[in-house]
Image (cartoon, rainbow, N blue to C red; front, side):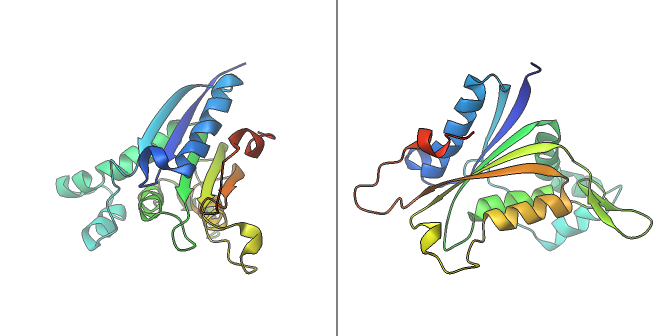
Length: 197
């Protein structure tokens, strides 16, 4: 079996107390145990915070070739693209904050999506991603349970999946959830959550 490289994205501010980090780490460990991966690149977005989008950064995204100053602005974004390009498997962990993903994860995604780098258009104006064939695992932690939310209020997995497929490339995406973390007596069972991984 040809072994593969995994990119592990951590985006919770809770450190070792994070349920999303524990779930994404459990995914990584299971992939190692099954010998599906042999190399893991870990990026903790709370320690290396992605830049938020500003006017000069937007200009750098759409200028090729850019000035020395613009190339400097793109250093973080270039690293993100390189990480994703070199990974066969991407494991993304995020808590739910106010029904959405963590701000640092959204900022990381904004650094990843770039015209001419991760997506482009053909002669008929049809958009397609350029980084195809990735396998992506989403590890989402929430204080409540998806079954208790109003219909149409799932904003994390649906958002990430839509962005990846529209602006990055064709991907096999699987979502795992650890839910009800604020409920009395909560004890996570990661093996049960990942039983079908």
